[in-house]
Image (tube, rainbow, N blue to C red; front, side):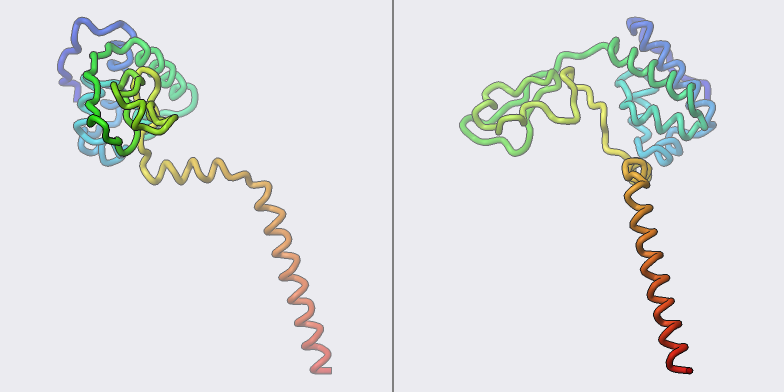
Length: 191
């Protein structure tokens, strides 16, 4: 569990602190990286990159780890703040531009992690597609694909209970009227 490889010396203090806290949280779960990958929908290799500071984890991965570790409330909020500070300070590698075929159109959005359209892509990419919607200006993906069980929680929290309640009340009233009419019709026929 605690046999982590040393973090690079050149890491900013915010990143070092965040990754150390993330490692402690992972150790607290008592799970292997494979088991953690299964429970969080982020692969073993992704967790290796996150926990060795090779790549910043998406916010949802941190939330998933907190959930698996049984962390809630203020402690989860503290991890969110640590994540924000670490992502801002995380060292960025320069990324080469994405090649665009000469004169051809490119299927889908074209951007480089810096958020700028690829050279020559302006004419062949529809307006508004230069930067992927899930990526920020620095190219960091904050909203990854979520596991289906997290999507159910979000979907149910977005649907207000208010409109459903009056509809159910209406259905119950209609059912009561139908049952009352059936009872009256039955009494008339028997009588």
